[in-house]
Length: 128
Image (cartoon, rainbow, N blue to C red; front, side):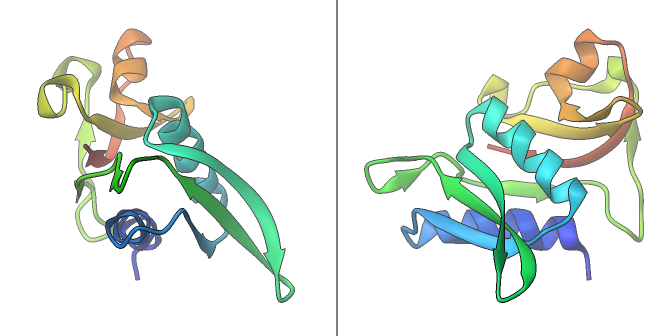
């Protein structure tokens, strides 16, 4: 099972049915992805909680009326096929309305940040 794919699809689906928040099993990579999504304006907040003795990541979704900020996601790098991009290969997603999420040597960040810092890395997914 691909935990990053499950995470981003669960966030997208929760927004599609009109939920204000969702919880997913906790991991450090999911938490760092959630922080980047918060910084890019796709979610309101994300925090670590404990439910029934297990750590979970509680994600509050950002919505404008009934529509949520997340319209679509696309997984780029998969466990079966890793995709790496140089800083010069990172392009805007949906004419700048979306974001590319990249795992670099300096941590998880958006494609814009990685390009500014001239860092390449594994292209995890794009979101718009």
